[in-house]
Image 1: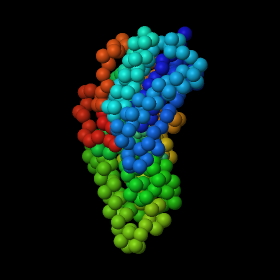
Image 2: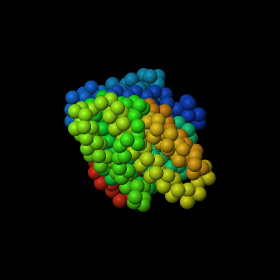
Image 3: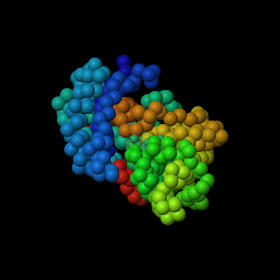
Image 4: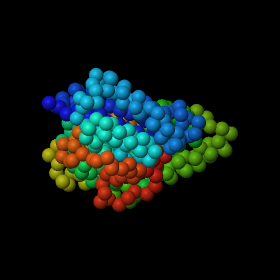
Length: 363
Ligand code: KG4
Ligand code: ZN
């Protein structure tokens, strides 16, 4: 008999609830997955406003949970537990989810399972593809960028990550500097299609240093200078300038991610995994050039490659329910003293990363 959990996610700007079971066939696992976005609430502010996000989560979470239960044609009393994102993320949002989950757990008597949001992303390839441990994961989104060796449901080794901005954040800033629509990833990718990536040679930060750490904050300064150079030369930005700037920027991000991932692959292979896999997750995994570069590095170095479907790469509660299923198979549930943690590194032995992304604390 499969076990079934309710998952709750509210760590950033998506209010999400899902019902997921541990059926053998991945096709039969997600019984429902509801995501209520908040884009329009934050649109006028150029980024996520934590207080607005927290209030919207508090208003929408119970509705999302009821929708998820209805869509799965089930009731709370028929489930085996409640998994909730307990961090890392924006504290007000995480608190909203944790308080709701505690209330539901106290009222129903169901076990409560606090889940690390990043573990949700990192375990998604097991939900979708039954990937065997250990596998290598590049988690790359608007708020996160980490290379992880995933050894078990709560065992992660961080091989590297960004020391400042996340790549998605850099795409968003680039779009803002070039007056392209948000979110920046898709609009920069589109504009880059007609561009010449060799016209502007943007820096590839930290490639000259050993290791898998990355940096993307210097790229936006380089882009700003190149943009202002174009404006000074031609009295404004021409379409070709915009396309070449986007292509040059995208190529720089692609090259850094591909090279650092390649180094992480070499490190991962030293432990001689029986079935080596590279998985990528997060919104930036939607970028075709970046995805193709990662896939080709993986293949060159003898790994299989997977990227979950985009709706499961971006924030959702199905991944939280799944991480809860995996965690609760080996660990005792949490008590009603479960705390919300704005910072919660996956690998507590790794040195903390510097900086903090636009969408909350890095971990
Ligand atoms: O995973 P996600 O939905 O949210 C979190 O950050 O948690 O990722 C959103 C980020 C945004 O910064 C967006 O610009 C970026 O992913 N993104 C892309 C593409 N599609 C979305 N970046 C590059 N290329 C894309 N096609
Ligand atoms: Zn996320």
